[in-house]
Amino acid sequence: MTKTRLEAFSDGVIAILITIMVLELKVPTEGISKVEIGDPAALKPLWAIFLSYVLSFALVGIYWSNHHHLLHTVKRVTGGMLLANLHLLFWLSLVPFTTHWMGESHFEPWPTAAYGVVQIACAVAWLILQAVIVRAHGPESELKQAVGDDWKGKFSVISYVTAIPIAIFGYPYVSLGLFALVAMIWIVPDRRIERQLRHE
Image (cartoon, rainbow, N blue to C red; front, side, top):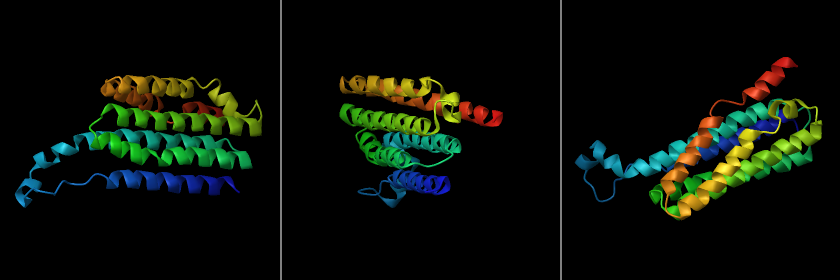
């Protein structure tokens, strides 16, 4: 399989996931009049669903952006990369479910913790894909030189692991803060890879 086909497939899956999430943003119509529907106050019950969507859109978008950068370092696609990439996409495909559950529950402890579990799995899957690419291209590869010890990836996993018990013990908004913090440190595409590729 060519790198272009791998990237196109991944892009398609991620686009579908974002589409599924936005389809959950529905104007409440049951039991209210047309006049009430036209009132912006009718959207008030959606605040948690919308906030969940924004957070997940940012996180999935970050995976898409950094996945694009990651594949720029690939010279040849191996079977291991295909499996590792599918593993990442599997966990990303669960993001819409946990996003909706967390939003519908208005950030109850267990749905928020479940969201954290899926985010841990996504972060670990990312580290695995990265490691498979490095193994295929060697320790002197562009990717290895660019990411080094990858403190951002490890920090993400630690943050998600910390967020889960915090949510379970009744502080889901603190967990949301940790999820948002991870998004903030990744929001800019991985400049390390860009710099490394410019030096080649």
